[in-house]
Image (cartoon, rainbow, N blue to C red; front, side, top):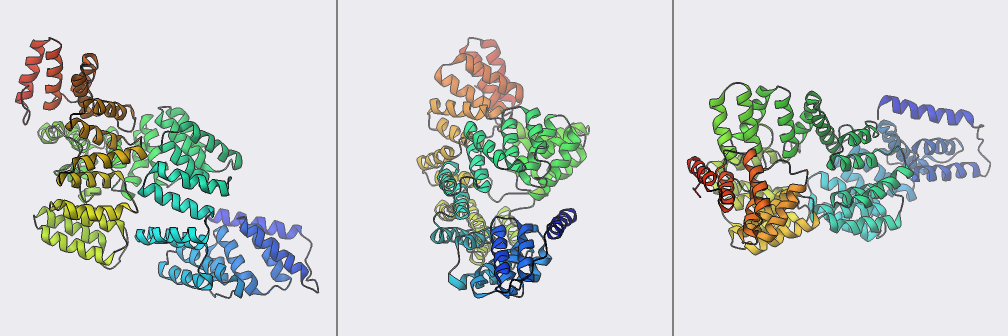
Amino acid sequence: MPDRLRARGALAALLLLTAMPPLAAAPDGSGSAQALQKGREAVGGGDGIAGEVELRRALDGGAPEAEVSALLGEAYLQQGDLAAARHWLEPGNFAADQRERGFHMLARLELADGNFDEALAAFEKALAVRGGTAEIWVDIGRMRYGNGQQHQALAASLEALKHGADDPRALQFRGQLVRDSRGLAAALPWFERGLKAAPDDAGLLGDYAATLGELGRTKDMLRVTRRMIELDGGNPQPFFLQAVLAARAGNYTLARRLLWRTEDKLDGQPAAMLLEGILEMQSGNWALAVQALDELARRQPENMQALNLFGRALLENGNAREVLDRFVPLADRPDASPYVLTLVGRAHEVLGDRLAAAPYLDRAAAVRRPGVSPLPVGEAGELAIFRWGDDPGRPDVAVARIRKFLAAGDAAAAASLANGLAEYYSDSSDVQVIVGDVALARGDAAAALTSYRAASLVRMPFSLVEKMAAAFRLSGQDRAARALVGDYLSQHPRDGAATRLLGGMMAESGDWRRAGALFGHAAALREVGRDPWLHGMIARAAIERGDRQLALDEGMKAYRMQRANGETVRILGRILQQAGRNDEARALFAKAGKIQGAEPG
């Protein structure tokens, strides 16, 4: 806790103490018991300052330290005073009926200090009392999840529900895990069930509102966030969620005003950093956008949205040299995205080196469909999945070696290393994805699917959906691949990448009606941005359906965005040919024929 807040808390406690008449211990101890009960109620309500005052009164009135230590330690934890909390919790001097609570609070203290082994030992002592509570099992689950033991976290969430079927924290944690593994729509009933038990719970309301927003249920989301503001006008989350909603609608002025109302309480949180960067970009404040996105890109090198926005902000701010320093390693990979390739090409152009720019821009203009990139790459081309310090086996180092083996064509060595990693980190869904990636790279679709399915029980982001779809298609199960992506899209209807992928699958199967609807939906999502491939596919779908005007409009959009893309040029040629503009069509077919890799119309 910042010093000024700690000082403020101490001052408030002092004022409360000086405002009260001295408490003399009653002969029968009733004053001490009353203070202890008030302290217990204050701490239970989350008011650590009031709890501290009452509990110290209980001590002064003769209450044994063993009766107070667990509660007083919890009161200091609520205030963020870890040193004072340790004074009361670390000795383990708890009365018999306070041992469970005391060791639970000690576990929370150790987690706050980053002492995972000590936290686990404290949790074990708390569980030894009577098997734990829902709240204890939720904390255990969150610890395991953060420590890379995602499958154990899943088991802990189920254990929490056994100990408290209507416990708000247990239902919230379960809802969060369901959201990660099964999707947004599947998570809603868990949050709704939690809100039935605790209608004004801020954590549940926040998760419920965020999930509604991601599902596109904006009216419901606004209703929930307004309720959150009624309950606590100082809570920054509802204002942030409303700011995200405004930004998605293109009302950046309103989004900025709402973000201001968070009063910097969300500073340092990735989602807030991303939104701040986007708003600065929309205002043309490129230097501020760079500042906001640089730290995010460093902390989350696997977050390609943040990385792409950071690159654009750098280029617009005149930092072309830094663009090359940061992005050339990514652009030189064979699976580099058109965005990164274009970014590097434009940076070379800004520096006056058109010769160096040409290969990157040519690659960016090549026909490209949504694809799969196993083993995610972070800053400077390094693999970035784990940040687990110096654990034995060093997953970050192991993953880098796996990729080098694959690049050298030594799939057997890559598989051996991946399987060893999986044996050591058997409860990690991240490692299961890596094992699946190696199997997919070796062409073993069945083994890849086995690992991917195990990982999806805990977490199923779209990147995993892409890989599972690729494994299905590699084994000839195209229908299963379409069903998988369709199921994901039903749970995440605003996911533009999933919409594009399913649209491409429908186009390949000849279902141009559904493909056109999906491509149109993807284009309407602001998250997708300018995408010549997408507009070209909308044009193709319109051609197949006989909608010549839409085909012409979308074909021209795609062509203006990427005039050197042979597929885009050829699509526009077909559109003009159907419209009877044969001379223009022949010129475009000739141009397409000159572009490497394109087939004349």
